[in-house]
Length: 409
Ligand code: FES
Ligand SMILES: [Fe+2]
Image 1 (tube, rainbow, N blue to C red):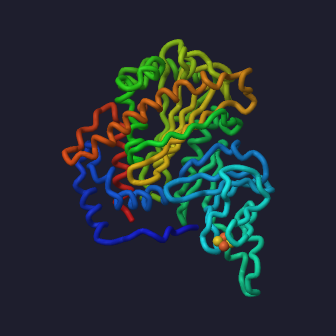
Image 2 (cartoon, rainbow, N blue to C red):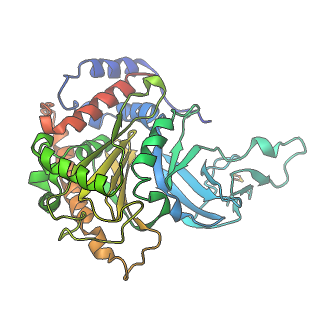
């Protein structure tokens, strides 16, 4: 649908390709990948504008006319629900002279009226009125630019690509994971945005590895067995799978982590145990909210989903977490955390918001600090990428995936 106009293809392309070629397998990325504005532009072109991103849970715009504006990189997206209930995503820039059409962050509107010369757009982006334009002006050619949208198990995904990556394997695995946890019948209990002074990849790389969990996350490591190498928690994991199976649930774990060479989006889902007697990701290990989806009891496990370049999901039996990573500039990114509970759960009766959000708030405060420590370290001209540890297998997978993405036009 869209073709961003502003990428400079030049000699710098060869320079970046040479940097990719110089990457030492099994090692961290070199300094320019976190510092260089041209590599940041390349990231946007080949990762950000090519892959799918989760923007929200659809329960944030439940009614016709509801909308919310999302900012990512240099883009602003209006996510809106039209009269017929369909969700539309369009760029918040007027087709007349480019002004922001929607100036409110969130609300309900029948139409969006540009504050500059009052061109008026419907909820679906169609241009409905343009004052005093000549007879030959075609309104139908001047609707807001639209993005591809998919809604799966309540999650709203967008793609900027002209030809979006095939989403069918992603959809299947989301049904097998988030679907079992009832995310399609969930609601947002809380959202929190973190601004991080670091390149977006440092934030994602930190998210995908748990080698740092032991030293950096004492609270998380009390309850989640992922702080240990996988081969040391095999028995715990087998007990968890047996409990899940006894509940009659088969949560799909599956690996479709692929580069976009084959035209498909990447998704990888894996499961791991909580320590004995722990029900969910809480301070005392006890339940935080009502059970979700097909769960009639706690299985003492977690399902983790990595999807494309920026979307990560965590499913517990009684709540869910969405992690959105948002590039803002070469040295700044944002991370939005979204807490989901069953749509019928009531705050105060079924869950306590402070208890619900405690674990991932303390953990994310710790993560923000270590990501920013790392960003300061890699700014040094003496920084040299070190070897990736065996426990960082998902970090290695992510780096290799990233390098393949940025090395292909
Ligand atoms: S820029 Fe929007 S109406 Fe002119
Ligand atoms: Fe962390």
